[in-house]
Amino acid sequence: MKYFILILSVMWMTNSTFAQLSIYQSNPLGLISKERIKIEYHFNQQNSLSIAGAAYWNFNQGQQVFLEYRRYSLNNNMYDDTKQFFLYGKFGGGISSNDANSKFIYSIFGGGLGWHRYLSDNFFIDIALGLKGSATTNNSSDDNNLKFITIGPGSFLDAAFHLGFDL
Image (cartoon, rainbow, N blue to C red; front, side):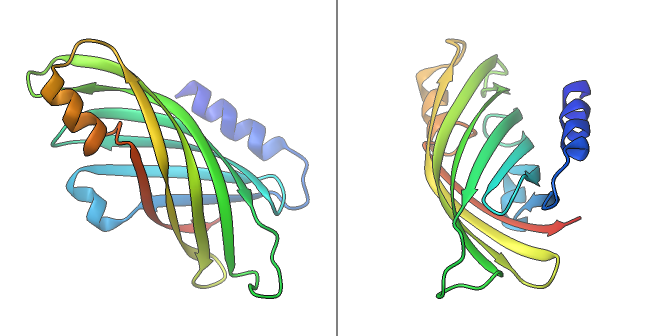
């Protein structure tokens, strides 16, 4: 928690005329298996850094934290300021447990592309799709590893739909 507060403090103290803070919340359908909150800091029109925390339940219960860098495209004649495409990369890790309540630690890394659309001055939707890799400790069975990399926090398909607002 102290590192999270430190990162937020550094973000607020950065002297940037474009500095903007956004908060993301995972889509309501995702509440079946997880909840994710993400805070994004825009350094300028093209670059941002996010820190996210997630809690998983049902399969592979546990927590996850990751950092994400985004590179937004500059708008051209086809798009206005309300729509932006982006590329992203992420890395992080977490702790999870399998069906036998055996806990294990994992790391994740990945990247992809996405689309950010403002619905009003401050509210937006955000859709991203990419690939993700993960590495785990050996404390889980093969069956649980299969669940972990297909439908769990270590899923190789990194798909996200978020609702959010700018502060």
